[in-house]
Length: 114
Length: 127
Image 1 (cartoon, rainbow over the protein chains, first blue to last red):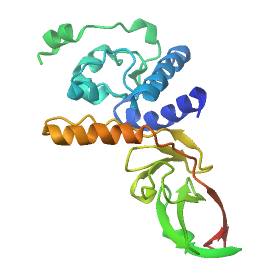
Image 2 (image 1 turned 180 degrees about the horizontal axis):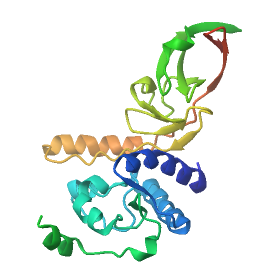
Image 3 (image 1 turned 90 degrees about the horizontal axis):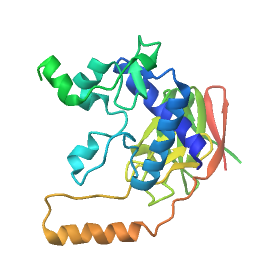
C-alpha cells in the first residue's frame, strides 16, 4: 500500500459519487493531487479520508460531515461557490477553477437564506 | 486441478459470490466483465467478504472496511478500527476501548488469489 496507488483508488471511488452530485474533479491536477495526498495521510491516521481543509473536532457527528466527498452535507454553501471548500471538486461546467473563490459559510447563509 | 464453480451468468458485473471448494472458502467477483477469485475471509478478522461491497476493483470488507484489490488480493487500505462509541454506559465504553486496543495488535494480510478460467460460459477455479 503506497500513497500514489491509494490516491488512484480514492479518485476511482470518489469520481462516480461526485459525478452524481453534479461535480467533477478540479481541472487543476496539481491541486487534486495535493488534496488527495493529504486525504491519504488522514486516512492512514484516522481510518477515514477526512476533508484536508477543515478542522477535525472532538464532535464525531461534525467530523462525519467532513468525510470526503462532503458535498451532500454542505450543498448550499458549495453550490454558491461552485466548488467544495478545498477546491478538489468543482461544478461540472467550471473550466477555470482559479476564478472561483472561497466564501465563508456564514456569508452564503445570508445570501441563500438558510 | 480445475473445478467448475458457477456459470458466468451467475455473477453480474460488480457482483461477488462466495463458494466452498474442496474445503477452501473462495470469493469470486466480476470486475468489469472479468472474473477474479480471492480467499473469502478478510485478511484482518476473517469476516465474510461477500457481505461487503465491490466497486470496480475495490473490495471492501463489511466489518472494519479494510479494502482489497479484487484482481490481485493486495490490501489497499487498513481496517478502520476506531469505534468511538457515544452515549453508551461506561462498562460498554470500557469494552470498546479494550477491543480497540486488541485490534490494533492484529495485522491485516493480503488475500490469497486463485486462478480463474472461463470456458463455455462456465467459471472454473484452479486450486
